[in-house]
Amino acid sequence: MNGLVLEGGAMRGMFTCGVLDVFMENNISFDGAVGISAGACFGCNIKSKQPQRALRYNLKYGTDPRYMSVRSLLKTGDLYGAKFCYHTIPKDLDPLDFDTFKNNPMKFYAGATDVETGKIVFHEFTDMNDTDIEWMRASASMPLVSRIVEVGKYKLLDGGITASVPLAFMQKLGYEKNVVVMTQPEGYIKEKNPTMPIARIVLRKYPKLIAAMSKRHIVYNKEVRIANEAEKAGNAFIIRPECSLGIKRTENRPHELVRVYELGRNAALLRLDELKKFLGAV
Image (cartoon, rainbow, N blue to C red; front, top):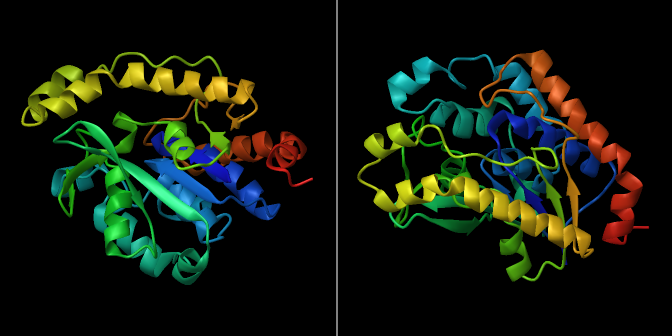
């Protein structure tokens, strides 16, 4: 089985959007996919088969204070407005194709961090119902600028805390060949989280979450090494930027979003024939 692994990175995810649109335009499909944070939020469009949707709504609503703003953070506790981003846009303003999403046989998963255990938890999406949407929101809920998301028995935050590049998850499910889309260039090394002193105060009720946050750079760098080794072994195909994308996590200027989106398209187009060969499509 062929799998797709999508790293997060907030608005670095526009690079991923460009990559995925090239996949859709060239009828490249997968048996399953997993996304973390922005990788999940933007990656769901490959299951609903809607190229350019993520680019379109980010360009149109990125500067809307209901989408992302300090006002939203102060008013609701979420930098990215929960109601507007996860309900108003996909249901009313730029609808997700819910029927196609449901009927597409490709499995789709997202990961979020359980704040009480400090461990990653994965959820399989079915038809993008309200439970699925809350898992999507949880996966992208960055600590310190988001409320904890409660879904069922879980209290959740950003999946990137504990599994930014969950290739191992897909391998355990039986996906032998995986395409991994990263939003950092080759050789990037994540450093210690500079916000830890604040996190230890704000999130003091969740010591295991704090422990996980303090080790995030170690986990991330290990995951990248695993992906690199899998690529050398011929079991993974990594698409990543050639250099740092130079985009803020909260970027909303249209020209910057388009710039990074085009970098993703170019990266995918440059290796399209090689990718098809890897997947056995040629």
